[in-house]
Image (cartoon, rainbow, N blue to C red; front, side, top):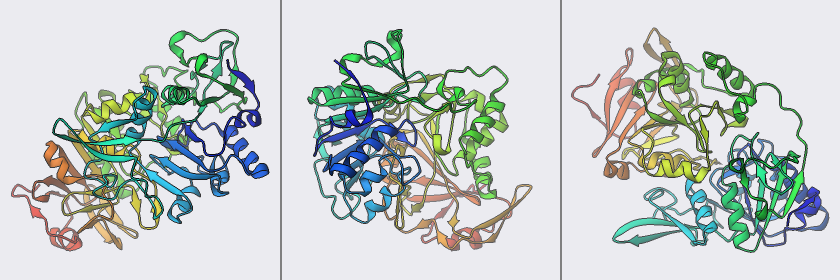
Length: 508
């Protein structure tokens, strides 16, 4: 039977050496007060220590002094297994300094492995990850020099077909953020942006004889409607009530508690972009790329749009009117709305449906999208893409690997060079005023997030759209298929690349 506890009482259920699974999505839905209580206890008593933390999408508040950052930095954690490290500002630096073991697995593969553990199955099979960095034959999931555990990802053969087998440590503690607990301990997520992996995490922890700790905003007397109670009270051990400050008008459209009136979509999208401090791409480079990439959209497409330059696709899809004729999705489980960005990335304005994250990755892994638009740090002569690891910096693969693994059309949106690139666009005529000092098209990417070889085998259409030209992936590598007005092929494209490319006979 659950008990109502203070944060300090609840974290007493966590013991040295426990494996904690956190149900957060990058910077949203973090059980902040529970993380703060862990830090206070560790600071005072040196316990809990030797912790392992698992999180599908990572956790953090874009502030190195909040959430779990402090106790990770102080040495309470021995091992991190995450899909994304972007919102964990000090942690992702410590990872590269070999301060503790850290492993990066595709977000959806972690989600599916958690669900498998909840059902009493040690791990999850997936085609996602073959021929990219996480494949043990390439690099493996370990991020730094001390991360050498080979048990998390293995190559297996099933009926003559090759898969990766993802296996996680047994979960001892579920750390969850919900909206409300009713008198039976049922947990609802009514005012949350998503439910993520919450139910699977709780089921896995209980199956392993562990504890479920849930932070909620309030207690309610009236039981939730059965379909709204994501976590049944019988799975809950501790409920911690922390009243939240009002977050202001506008966020109702992100949580689904407010239906956007017909004809007011543009207004509400602008409101949410302001509230989320969204830094949507407004540079000339991003605008050129977004305008061109939007032409790849078709009516009734099911779509995922990545962060960064790809976000400009949303802008031009709205301007051209096709935004209302496609279905957007986001990794956290939202379908049929407009993805938010900035600190609330993972939320969706006006979502038609928000379901468990593992279900969303069922859609992605099985080619349920029609098209996706992703960013890229590097592209090589074989069409491989690095999107997760820069020089001296690490964000992680997130859902990128799942989204690009089987989607029929994959569009990479990237500048041709970086650092110092200055471009002018005069009524569609592009001028490279100053070239960037960092080339994006290289002989060999430093780490593989996307495999060109496997994309060809899968029969996927792959485009690389830049501010000056468009490439298409072929069995022989990249082919230049389009050059924008004002661009000189030799000066602005071929001479700036580390490898030769074929120029299409029907070059546009």
